[in-house]
Image (tube, rainbow, N blue to C red; front, side):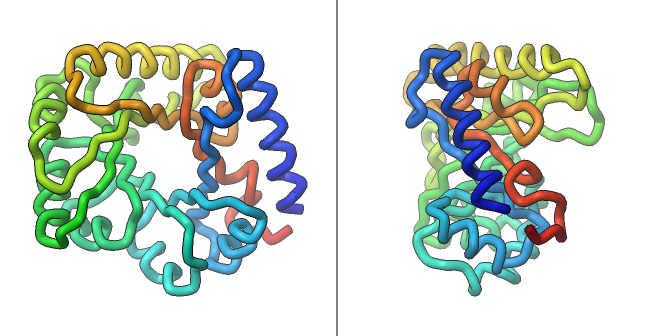
Length: 231
Protein backbone atom coordinates (compact mmCIF):
# COMPACT_ATOMS: atom_id res chain seq x y z
CA UNK A 1 0.00 0.00 0.00
CA UNK A 2 1.05 3.57 -0.67
CA UNK A 3 0.93 4.57 2.99
CA UNK A 4 3.25 1.71 3.91
CA UNK A 5 5.77 2.64 1.22
CA UNK A 6 5.67 6.29 2.32
CA UNK A 7 6.19 5.30 5.96
CA UNK A 8 9.18 3.13 5.03
CA UNK A 9 10.74 5.93 2.99
CA UNK A 10 10.19 8.42 5.80
CA UNK A 11 11.90 6.04 8.22
CA UNK A 12 14.87 5.65 5.89
CA UNK A 13 15.14 9.40 5.37
CA UNK A 14 15.17 9.85 9.13
CA UNK A 15 17.85 7.21 9.66
CA UNK A 16 20.03 8.58 6.84
CA UNK A 17 19.69 12.08 8.28
CA UNK A 18 20.79 10.86 11.68
CA UNK A 19 23.81 9.10 10.19
CA UNK A 20 24.80 12.41 8.61
CA UNK A 21 24.07 14.30 11.86
CA UNK A 22 21.37 16.29 10.12
CA UNK A 23 17.82 17.19 11.07
CA UNK A 24 14.99 15.47 9.19
CA UNK A 25 13.61 18.93 8.40
CA UNK A 26 16.67 19.64 6.23
CA UNK A 27 15.52 17.15 3.57
CA UNK A 28 12.40 17.59 1.46
CA UNK A 29 10.67 14.63 -0.17
CA UNK A 30 9.50 15.11 -3.74
CA UNK A 31 7.00 12.53 -4.98
CA UNK A 32 7.80 11.93 -8.65
CA UNK A 33 4.37 11.40 -10.18
CA UNK A 34 5.33 11.23 -13.87
CA UNK A 35 3.41 8.58 -15.72
CA UNK A 36 0.70 8.36 -13.06
CA UNK A 37 -2.84 9.76 -13.33
CA UNK A 38 -4.19 12.71 -11.38
CA UNK A 39 -6.07 10.34 -9.07
CA UNK A 40 -2.76 8.94 -7.77
CA UNK A 41 -1.49 12.43 -7.03
CA UNK A 42 -4.71 13.27 -5.19
CA UNK A 43 -4.33 10.14 -3.08
CA UNK A 44 -0.73 11.03 -2.27
CA UNK A 45 -1.68 14.60 -1.41
CA UNK A 46 -4.34 13.27 0.95
CA UNK A 47 -1.55 11.68 3.04
CA UNK A 48 0.08 15.09 3.47
CA UNK A 49 2.55 15.14 0.57
CA UNK A 50 2.75 18.58 -1.00
CA UNK A 51 5.74 18.46 -3.35
CA UNK A 52 5.55 16.59 -6.67
CA UNK A 53 7.78 16.23 -9.72
CA UNK A 54 6.71 15.83 -13.34
CA UNK A 55 8.88 15.15 -16.40
CA UNK A 56 6.78 16.41 -19.29
CA UNK A 57 5.01 19.71 -19.81
CA UNK A 58 2.12 18.30 -21.83
CA UNK A 59 1.49 15.36 -19.51
CA UNK A 60 1.22 17.60 -16.47
CA UNK A 61 -0.93 20.14 -18.32
CA UNK A 62 -3.52 17.45 -19.09
CA UNK A 63 -3.98 16.45 -15.44
CA UNK A 64 -3.40 19.63 -13.44
CA UNK A 65 -7.06 20.71 -13.53
CA UNK A 66 -7.90 17.57 -11.52
CA UNK A 67 -5.31 18.22 -8.81
CA UNK A 68 -5.97 19.66 -5.34
CA UNK A 69 -4.98 23.18 -4.41
CA UNK A 70 -1.98 23.79 -2.20
CA UNK A 71 0.48 21.41 -3.84
CA UNK A 72 3.79 22.37 -5.46
CA UNK A 73 4.79 20.76 -8.75
CA UNK A 74 8.28 21.06 -10.22
CA UNK A 75 9.43 20.24 -13.73
CA UNK A 76 12.24 17.70 -13.38
CA UNK A 77 12.53 16.62 -17.03
CA UNK A 78 14.34 18.24 -19.91
CA UNK A 79 12.57 21.42 -21.06
CA UNK A 80 12.36 22.01 -24.79
CA UNK A 81 12.62 25.61 -25.96
CA UNK A 82 9.21 25.60 -27.64
CA UNK A 83 7.52 24.72 -24.32
CA UNK A 84 9.17 27.36 -22.14
CA UNK A 85 6.17 29.70 -21.95
CA UNK A 86 3.77 26.91 -21.02
CA UNK A 87 6.18 25.47 -18.43
CA UNK A 88 6.68 28.88 -16.85
CA UNK A 89 2.92 29.27 -16.54
CA UNK A 90 2.04 25.92 -14.98
CA UNK A 91 4.99 24.75 -12.84
CA UNK A 92 5.97 26.01 -9.40
CA UNK A 93 9.67 25.64 -10.25
CA UNK A 94 11.90 24.54 -13.13
CA UNK A 95 14.59 22.21 -11.76
CA UNK A 96 16.37 21.34 -15.00
CA UNK A 97 17.80 24.53 -16.45
CA UNK A 98 20.68 23.16 -18.51
CA UNK A 99 21.72 25.97 -20.86
CA UNK A 100 22.16 29.71 -20.93
CA UNK A 101 19.69 29.94 -23.80
CA UNK A 102 17.01 28.19 -21.76
CA UNK A 103 17.67 30.46 -18.78
CA UNK A 104 17.25 33.54 -20.96
CA UNK A 105 14.02 32.22 -22.50
CA UNK A 106 12.59 31.51 -19.08
CA UNK A 107 13.44 35.05 -18.05
CA UNK A 108 11.55 36.44 -21.05
CA UNK A 109 8.55 34.21 -20.37
CA UNK A 110 8.48 35.16 -16.70
CA UNK A 111 8.76 38.85 -17.48
CA UNK A 112 5.88 38.69 -19.95
CA UNK A 113 3.74 36.92 -17.36
CA UNK A 114 4.86 39.24 -14.54
CA UNK A 115 6.17 36.22 -12.64
CA UNK A 116 9.30 35.24 -10.78
CA UNK A 117 10.32 31.65 -11.54
CA UNK A 118 12.48 29.65 -9.12
CA UNK A 119 15.00 27.47 -10.97
CA UNK A 120 17.77 24.98 -10.33
CA UNK A 121 20.79 24.59 -12.59
CA UNK A 122 21.20 20.99 -13.74
CA UNK A 123 24.83 19.88 -13.58
CA UNK A 124 26.03 16.93 -15.66
CA UNK A 125 28.49 14.82 -13.69
CA UNK A 126 28.58 11.71 -15.86
CA UNK A 127 29.66 10.80 -19.38
CA UNK A 128 26.28 9.30 -20.29
CA UNK A 129 25.11 10.76 -23.58
CA UNK A 130 21.43 10.65 -22.60
CA UNK A 131 21.93 12.98 -19.64
CA UNK A 132 21.73 16.75 -20.00
CA UNK A 133 23.13 19.57 -17.91
CA UNK A 134 25.84 22.19 -17.68
CA UNK A 135 29.40 20.93 -17.66
CA UNK A 136 30.66 22.01 -14.22
CA UNK A 137 33.79 23.75 -15.54
CA UNK A 138 32.15 25.29 -18.61
CA UNK A 139 32.22 28.95 -19.53
CA UNK A 140 28.50 28.69 -20.21
CA UNK A 141 27.77 27.76 -16.60
CA UNK A 142 29.84 30.65 -15.30
CA UNK A 143 27.99 33.00 -17.62
CA UNK A 144 24.66 31.59 -16.45
CA UNK A 145 25.56 32.36 -12.84
CA UNK A 146 26.69 35.86 -13.75
CA UNK A 147 23.63 36.65 -15.87
CA UNK A 148 21.19 35.13 -13.37
CA UNK A 149 21.96 37.83 -10.82
CA UNK A 150 20.28 40.49 -12.95
CA UNK A 151 17.88 38.48 -15.12
CA UNK A 152 14.29 39.54 -14.63
CA UNK A 153 11.84 36.94 -13.41
CA UNK A 154 14.47 34.37 -12.37
CA UNK A 155 15.44 33.16 -8.92
CA UNK A 156 18.25 30.60 -8.86
CA UNK A 157 17.84 28.41 -5.77
CA UNK A 158 20.56 25.81 -6.24
CA UNK A 159 21.75 22.80 -8.19
CA UNK A 160 20.47 19.39 -9.24
CA UNK A 161 22.03 16.30 -10.75
CA UNK A 162 21.29 12.68 -11.63
CA UNK A 163 23.88 10.14 -10.59
CA UNK A 164 25.34 7.77 -13.20
CA UNK A 165 23.64 4.40 -13.62
CA UNK A 166 26.01 2.06 -11.82
CA UNK A 167 25.54 -0.93 -9.53
CA UNK A 168 28.31 0.34 -7.27
CA UNK A 169 26.76 2.73 -4.70
CA UNK A 170 30.08 4.51 -4.29
CA UNK A 171 29.70 5.85 -7.83
CA UNK A 172 26.56 7.72 -6.76
CA UNK A 173 28.25 8.84 -3.55
CA UNK A 174 31.16 10.36 -5.45
CA UNK A 175 28.73 12.18 -7.74
CA UNK A 176 26.73 13.64 -4.86
CA UNK A 177 29.84 14.59 -2.94
CA UNK A 178 31.14 16.43 -5.97
CA UNK A 179 27.90 18.37 -6.46
CA UNK A 180 27.98 19.41 -2.82
CA UNK A 181 31.55 20.65 -3.23
CA UNK A 182 30.63 22.48 -6.42
CA UNK A 183 27.71 24.17 -4.67
CA UNK A 184 30.05 25.41 -1.95
CA UNK A 185 32.52 26.67 -4.55
CA UNK A 186 29.84 28.42 -6.62
CA UNK A 187 28.43 30.01 -3.46
CA UNK A 188 31.81 31.58 -2.76
CA UNK A 189 32.18 32.78 -6.35
CA UNK A 190 28.63 34.09 -6.72
CA UNK A 191 27.74 35.46 -3.31
CA UNK A 192 24.72 37.38 -4.59
CA UNK A 193 22.93 34.12 -5.42
CA UNK A 194 21.30 31.90 -2.81
CA UNK A 195 22.31 28.37 -3.80
CA UNK A 196 20.84 26.48 -0.86
CA UNK A 197 19.07 23.68 -2.72
CA UNK A 198 20.87 20.47 -3.60
CA UNK A 199 18.42 18.25 -5.48
CA UNK A 200 20.04 14.85 -5.70
CA UNK A 201 19.01 11.31 -4.96
CA UNK A 202 16.26 9.11 -6.38
CA UNK A 203 14.59 5.82 -5.41
CA UNK A 204 17.79 3.76 -5.62
CA UNK A 205 20.24 6.15 -4.00
CA UNK A 206 18.40 8.73 -1.88
CA UNK A 207 19.90 7.56 1.42
CA UNK A 208 23.41 8.07 0.06
CA UNK A 209 22.38 11.47 -1.29
CA UNK A 210 21.12 12.54 2.13
CA UNK A 211 24.40 11.45 3.71
CA UNK A 212 26.19 13.66 1.17
CA UNK A 213 24.07 16.76 1.78
CA UNK A 214 20.98 16.51 -0.40
CA UNK A 215 18.20 18.91 0.56
CA UNK A 216 15.63 17.42 -1.85
CA UNK A 217 15.23 13.77 -2.85
CA UNK A 218 13.14 12.84 -5.91
CA UNK A 219 11.36 9.52 -5.31
CA UNK A 220 8.99 7.89 -7.78
CA UNK A 221 9.10 4.10 -8.09
CA UNK A 222 9.76 3.48 -4.40
CA UNK A 223 6.65 5.51 -3.59
CA UNK A 224 4.21 4.73 -6.37
CA UNK A 225 5.51 1.44 -7.73
CA UNK A 226 5.95 0.92 -11.46
CA UNK A 227 4.05 3.25 -13.73
CA UNK A 228 0.53 2.00 -14.17
CA UNK A 229 0.64 -0.11 -11.01
CA UNK A 230 -2.12 0.62 -8.50
CA UNK A 231 -1.61 -0.76 -5.01
